[in-house]
Image 1 (cartoon, rainbow, N blue to C red):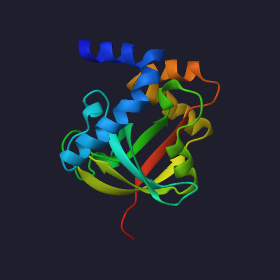
Image 2 (image 1 turned 180 degrees about the vertical axis):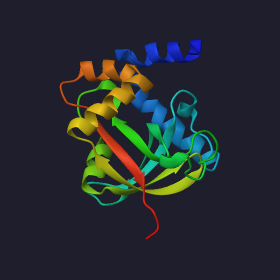
Image 3 (image 1 turned 45 degrees about the vertical axis):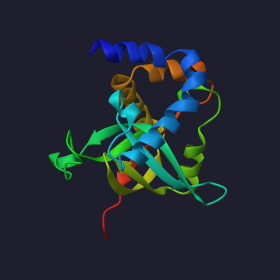
Image 4 (image 1 turned 180 degrees about the horizontal axis):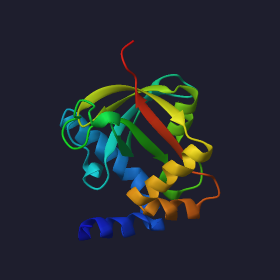
Length: 173
């Protein structure tokens, strides 16, 4: 593992990061994403990321949120090659809220309106979200912890169970 990633994992596990990051990381990601026409997310230099657009749970209005994600390799080994790297057709979103109390608002949005859109490496993709439960959640949680260990620190800091969602690409019907 690269030294920069180890440093970022330690930094992202701190309470100070949890207090400050929610105020600047999404704003910077939105601005850079807009300026690069969807090609760049600064936070994706450490973790893969998507821009999620989902209907608000109460308002029904589109809500756009930059989020870290764990891409899942496409079944069968092909999935259109989403802009380089491993092809994928599903993504795990982690409702960690940087280890702060309370579920992030985007999780309520997906629970009420599971059909959404993501921008993944500059490509717009229609997806359906599913809240993971039981054994499926347990398996995904273990994969998430292997992928980015600081999520264990976030979970230890809060009493709520961190919500995990699997986003699956909606195929043309």
